[in-house]
Amino acid sequence: MGSPIDSIPNFFPPTNILMISCLSEDPLYNNKSFLHQKYVVEGLSCEEIAAQIFSARTTVLKYLKIHGISVRETGTNQKRVRGLAYGQKIKERGRAEHKREQDAILKMRELRSKGFSYWKIADVLNTMKVPTKTRKGRWYAKTVQAILLKNE
Image (tube, rainbow, N blue to C red; front, side, top):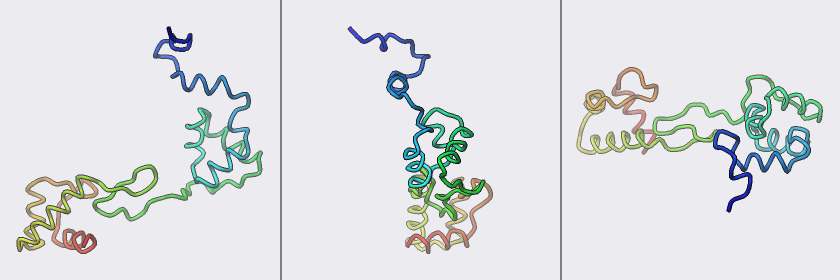
């Protein structure tokens, strides 16, 4: 026979959340070392911290200031990924391989090794309706060349 918590309907918060809230006397935003770890060391935003502790972003921001933790300027994101290359994607605030784009790069290499020109490879990609990085526009020889040179 299960515990009384197991009998709670599914529309109620999951049991692990219920257990955490029952065990914690002081809210996590009131813990200076917790906020320092998440905001300064891990570089999470106020919104990300708030989502983890089931609180409001403004509450997290307020307690950062109360605890004397210096707040970053609005709009600055310390782990921002810029210049995302074809074949990569953002996953958990870092770079990861984009499977479909990696497959397209392999196809480009294969066609190039068979003697296809960059223009012909671009034409094949357009015919196959392979999306570009922006998911708009067409493939051009210069783009194919740049991708192949970068991924050698």
